[in-house]
Structures are given as structure tokens and as C-alpha cells.
Length: 447
Image 1 (cartoon, one colour):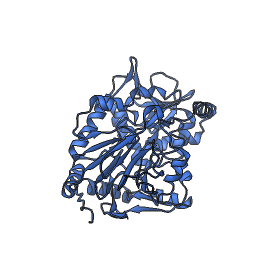
Image 2: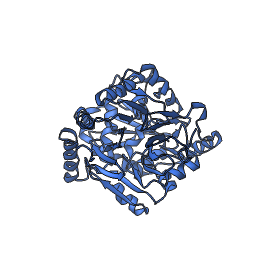
Image 3: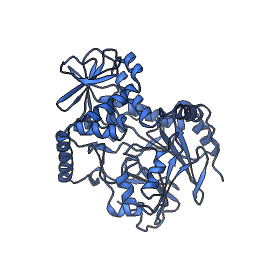
Image 4: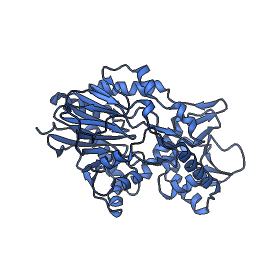
């Protein structure tokens, strides 16, 4: 593999390289990066559940740290990863989308980092003939478009943009008529496969669905190349490793690919002048040392088994659920329960109470969550992230549509991100969602 900081002849123009999970680096050969994104580069995320398939070397991370700009698309820890940010240091300017709630700016400032929100739907120069444009989306995520002299890079990461947004991007891209590189996630990162009934796993969507979705995006945007992105994680806890069988792999992409866009491998370096590329071979991947993974995941699980839930923890979860009390009563009139270690807590939405229950008949489903994870999620107000962990399992107790449980985690995210703190916060979120979905007008990049 050729490292980007090693001089090499006949490599003019800009290079695009994918690393880590959802990190892209834009650079000129032999120079520091102009821009990197979403740097999860070290360690793990989601309570020691997610680990990288291929870790960058220390030298590569040092090279990335020299970038003057780092764009963070959204707050999920596989994109906004503080251990990686601490490793990169306070030299770069950290750029964020202008979402409805921007607590991340104050958080970064408290920890000594320069951070700013990028004005939405406006091109911003970051280098000679290179500009970026940030597009917020309704689900507290964003997309980043990067215009270069010879190509337009479309970084959709996890955003899942609606059709009006895709049409707006396509109209703008057609006006400038440059080859388009699409990067977006292609593997499930939710509780979509976490349901169990008496027959085993209940999967809401097959692998083919995710490949078809990416192919549809490529065709809608008339992409010329697709780079596998934001899906380069494996699951290593003993209670989450089952999810590796439900990942969408690069082999799945190749098997079901039906787009005119050229499918490139993961961990690719692409020359944006002549579109030649090279990739890291699977046998050259650098996973975390196995003994270290076993030690860290084992320590985490031991801490979870030793934890105890306090009355304050239970009250905090009850308050969280009661934010949506009447919606939950309509969706789940029989109630549901949480299995937290040896304790089972049943939630009765009509009464607005979360109480100890002994019966196996606890309503429509039971959410099985380690105690310490629940404590931390409630205290940090990130309860919706439990559904991404891959070790939270949902046992269906009746003939019941599991998509309603999926909707429950989506509701929790609305509260996690502060949109229900006040009427003004809710209106601000709804107004921006409408504006950047149905009224989006994208300017062409400046010449």
C-alpha cells in the first residue's frame, strides 16, 4: 500500500482516500490533507460493541491530524468520536452542520477545540479551486458536497436524504457536469435485526435491500463511482457478534450490484484527475489486536454485570418514556418491559409508571439491555443510541408489528436531541426540516 505522505511521481491533482469508518481525506499527493471527515480512527464505539475492520497506522493518523479542516456530519459516536478527536488534537478547525440544536459547539469549546457551524447550502472555499457545501437533513444528520476542479464528491454518510433533496442535488450537479463520486453507508446500523420471537431472529429487511438502496442513490444522482463508506465496523462483544452475520459486506455489494456507477472496494485511494485507484487488500487489513479486544470487551461486560440500577435511574427512564406517554399508549396499549440484568421493569403508558414486574406476560415485547448501559444512556440523554449497539435484543411476546418498536427509538431520538425542550425548539426543528427538504435550492460552486 502506498501511503499518501510518500512522494511519488506522476500523481497530479487531488486524491480522495477512505479510512477508518466514515473518514475521507482529500489531499494533493505529498501534502497534508485539505479536509477530512468523521474521524473514528482509534478504539471502539457503542459500549465496546463496534470495532473497525481496518485501523490506520499511527503515521497515517499523524498525517490526518495535519488537516486544517475536519467536518463532522452528525453526533453519533461512530462519526463524532471524541477519542479520535483527542488523538488528532486542537490544531484543526472542527466544522459542524447548522442543525436545529448545536450543543456540540459549546461542548467542543469547553474541551479546548475550535469549532464552528458551516452555513447551510452555501459553498465555502477550503483550498485552491476546492469548496464544500453542507446540507442539514431532518434527522439530525447532514451531507457534505465537495467541489474539486475535476470531480464532485457527494458524501451522504448515514443521511438517507428524501427524494426532493436528491433532485435538488442532481439539478445542481447536472449544471456543473463533472464526474460524481458517491459515498454513503450500506449496512444496517439500527435495531432492524434485533428482534426475536419463538422461532429466532425476526429481520425487517434483507441484505439485498441495502444494496438496492445504494444502487438507487447512484442512479438518482447519476454517480460515476461509488465508494463503500460508513459501514466498516465489525461487532466484537460476545452479546453483539451475532450481528456480523447480518452486515452487508462488500461481497454482497458485488453480488447484487445493479447500477451504472462503478463499484470500488472499501479503503480506496482515487486519483481525481484520471480516476485510477488502488485499494487495501483484505489480507492487509489491520484489525485491533485480538487479545486487546477480548480484554476490553470482557472488562466492559464485567462492569455491566456488577452495576446496580438506582431509584434515580429508574425515575429518569420513566420521565423519558413519559415524554411520549400518550403516543406510547396508542402504540402499545398492553405495555412493554425492560429486562435489566436480574430486574424486569414494566412500563404502563396509561398510568405513566415504570415498575418492577414478575410476570412473564409483560405486554407486547421486552427490551433486554445491560444495566450499566441503560444507566449511562439515561444519564447522558442518549437513549436512542441503545438501538444501534447490536447487543440490545427485543423479544416479541405477541403477534406484533416490530416496526412500532423501531418507531419508538426514532421518537426517543427526537427528545435526545433537544427538540422537545420547548415549543421554540420544536418549531425550529420542524421549520428547518421543511426548509431543507422541500425548499432546498443549491447554488452551483463558484468558478
